[in-house]
Length: 461
Ligand SMILES: Nc1ncnc2c1ncn2[C@@H]1O[C@H](COP(=O)(O)OP(=O)(O)OP(=O)(O)O)[C@@H](O)[C@H]1O
Image (cartoon, rainbow, N blue to C red; front, side):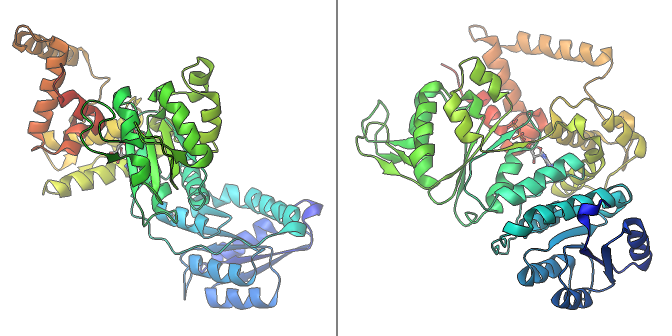
């Protein structure tokens, strides 16, 4: 350890004595005092008596767990940095621990490489903070419900960021390819925020025609346009006190971007056809699969709005960049799909997992979910082998099948109808039929968002 980190006290809390021995040796340095405890009650007594700079504690310590230990330590010593460790921290453990003030949450198995640099940087943070340290505000107890699977480092960093930003009102911009889980992350931001008792309203800016989007967002007065038969509140009013999730913000027309900017600046807006100004208290979470900076450069997105929205950016990595998430995601979808359909348990072979991990996944997690759903439907035994998994990079035979299906669709289109409109509607209708009318299920089957499916089903003029 560098000299600048001298005269610090580090407390290791873990039930495993071998780990305590290893970590004490591994971190030993001149002028670094290392204390150790194998239970939480004693650790608390140590912190009561001795100023401790950094605590590194196992989440599964006894007689109360590491998260509770951290809460009690931070109550009496808000300056202390607490790092929690767990064999396999769950999404909610990471978010909650970070939100309740953990400096970091680490997987046990990565400690051999990470422990020393993490402690060094924590001690450095302590030095930097020493003069101006402010206690973290106490946070309400949270019980998030959204289930997000992810063990990759990159996704766990996203969870930590969610934990940090959820409690503020700052706008959040979630970026990532289609199907990476942007909507799930938006839900997590809401569910872990103090606004969670109020509504999370979602609107897909790309799926609503420009002339309707304004009234959808801001509401309208009776008679303000043909079809406005009654006064109607918009999404901004409905979401008052809660969160408004603007999906596909990159598709929002420029005329509406100006109005959104006004709400972001001072919380005010007017219904379509009204002169008076209303105010609202809404937290904005926006998402896009587009590169908004290039949309700004090409004049399709307002620069001032971009900076207003991009106060906190959460970037969700593509699935192909985090193949280590695939085994757990596949298992999660398998269990969910078989349970939902009352099917017997289906397992997945190691070879099939390898095949999934080497696929490119242009449709990301949605495509994986869809692939597992199809594999379950077609499975000939209770174990999925590579041959049971229909991946898109399939051989030429698949191309022939697609051509045959296309010929069938084109031949079946009624004369006088636009074949593209008709076939889109037909595909959507068949998927819905196969899913017993369940829109969500049908959208998974096709690998498209349900808002697109709704659009495909709508009759065209
Ligand atoms: N980490 C994850 N854990 C569990 N399910 C996930 C995860 N990521 C995505 N999913 C599932 O994948 C599907 C697509 O996710 P979601 O709709 O949040 O993606 P998106 O990025 O918003 O997509 P789009 O840009 O097309 O709207 C959903 O069914 C969601 O539940």
